[in-house]
Image (cartoon, rainbow over the protein chains, first blue to last red):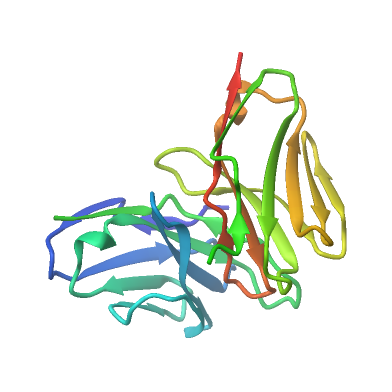
Length: 115
Length: 111
């Protein structure tokens, strides 16, 4: 079974621009979560999508948004980029919906650099 | 406010010995705990998990212990191998898909 894939793997943008990151979950997984990893803050939860609906949300400003498509693929968008948005953005998928907790499996991440 | 804490940023052990990585949490609503291993430039890899209704879970060389009264969990790796060298993250869930991570412990296993 193929793992979680994320595109692109690396991205360089300038302040004020916007960016869209893509994530394809493991086949059959319906939940997709996004995390931001920075050296200072570690791994922080951004949001989670399930059946095309945002089900959980972390403490990030509205510049960070996402969506999920009917095939469970997800995109994350960051508008008006700031230098502090430079980070590794990780996507994770899980089966979910079974009534018990299901482990999340992570993709390799997208390294975003904002200049 | 850090709800999941890994107080040791780094740990160094000899090959063949036991590695013990520790994690503390503050939120009583957490009922599921996970350990992930991460190599540079890769996403975290799931290692082992434990539900709050258990106090121990084993998977090969990896064992996780949970002490709910102390709000403490630990990951034991026996025997440690050089390939285990990586950053280990403890994570907790309140039953939702939102994982709260510790800041990680860098494990170095010396040959």
